[in-house]
Every structure is written in C-alpha cells, then in structure tokens.
Length: 105
Length: 131
Image (tube, rainbow over the protein chains, first blue to last red):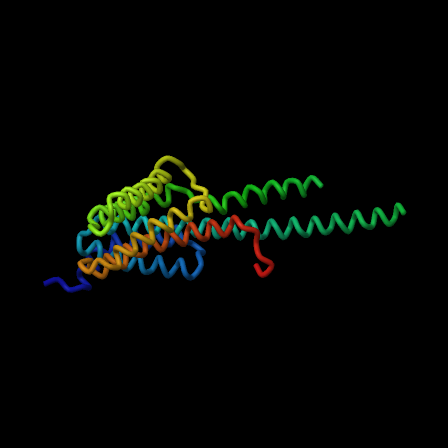
C-alpha cells in the first residue's frame, strides 16, 4: 500500500511544474488571485493522483484565466497612473494659461 | 502640449486594453463550461424544446466568440457569459452524483470567467471619485 506521502513524491514533478507555472503567471498578483492559484494547485495534485487528465486540463485552463485577470488589473493600474499624470499636466497648463492671460491683460 | 497629446494617446491605448479579454487565455475553460452546460441542458426533461434550443444557442454564441476572435470586448459580452455560467452553476450545484472535488473545480471555472468579465467591464466605465 502506497502512502499519501509516497504518492505525493511520485507526482511531485508534475505538481512542481504546475506550481512553477502558477508562480510565473501570477508574479506580483493580488492576494485573492494567489489564493485561487493555491487552491488550483492543491486540486491538481488530487487530479493527477486519480489520473483525471480532463480535470487536470481544466485546472490548467483556470490558471490561464487567472493570469488574464492579473494582466487586466495591471493594465488598469497603469491607466490610473497615466490618468493622474495627464491630470497634473492639464492643471499645469491651465495655471500657465491663466498666468499668461493675466500678464497680457 | 506635445507631451499632453502623447499621454492622451497612451491613456487611450491602455484604456482599451483593460476592457478587452484575450481569448487564448479563456478558450479551454469556456469550452469545458459550455460542454457541461450543453450536456445538462440536453438531458433536462423539464425544459421545452424551445427553451433547450435557446439555451444551446446562447452557449454556442459564447463558444463562437472564443474561437472566432483573438480578443473579446468584455462589456459587450458580459451578460452572455453571466447567463451561461449561472445556468451551468445551477446544474452543477444540483447534480448530487458529482464528487466534491469535481463540483469545486467546475464551479470555480465559471466563477473565474464571471470575475474576469466583470473586472474587464469595470474598466470600461469612468472611475468613481473614490477610486
């Protein structure tokens, strides 16, 4: 009879590969996405142990959806930074124009 | 002034990227969710033929989106994703023959899709003052 630990040892290369991919895909991701990634990785171990290839593929697909969510969040964060820079520049321009008009008058 | 223009263009480009979902990242999950959804709908005797056709047509539209395009505009298709996923979840939750692990994984697939489209759609609306 093989113990759970031995089973984990047998499948550890597969699970380690999934963990490595999850870490790479979700580098710097928010806590909620990291939690999803941990749950998925835990499920992968069970799916592999049961030889459930279809479930393993679905779990792999879930990691890709997580990575896409992470990409969107990162894009939105960049947009906010750009937006605030643009606002500052617009305000600066407004002040500059005001000073110029006052000087002209 | 020139810098202002360049920043505006950059802002517009990044803004578009936040509402567009890359289909390559979601194809696998959409495919399994639609397959399951369709199998449940086909075997549901409580549905009329018309209802079955309507539900299957809806899921086929979702699948076609991910196979025909490389990018999807999230706000436009969020309702479609929500509708198919909600029906999928209803069937999965009611299926008492499903092992706990499978139920957990199946429900997570739709949760992740709904979240992704919701987050991408938020990007389409102007940010609130509290942002």
